[in-house]
Image 1 (cartoon, rainbow, N blue to C red):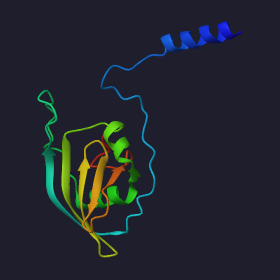
Image 2: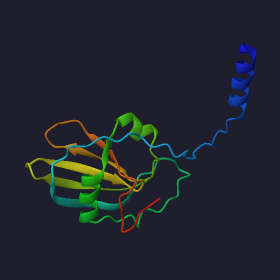
Image 3: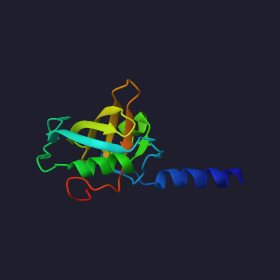
Length: 145
């Protein structure tokens, strides 16, 4: 019986497909509530920006133009993810927008949103940065892949 279980385990390990490097297996990080207050105002400081991670990355980011409404919606609907999941599980994209936000409780923060539906909020009061993810959000006028 032990031999049969061992053979089954080895067969399973050998036959389990692996994805080529860079392909997403559909796994998403666990999201928890951000507990951010209601958004009162949004300022967009930069839109359509491109962060060069590798010299082979040629993605054009000029069309990644988010609106104030999209930013507010992203901040309201996103779930918080751990910084590790933000870095290791979410698809990295070079396109991003940045700005500032004011909340109903008077707090303010910096924000960054990436084309891949991820981003962060860094409160001005020195509280830790909140990494966020919202796969169902619409950004730049459309629901992006």
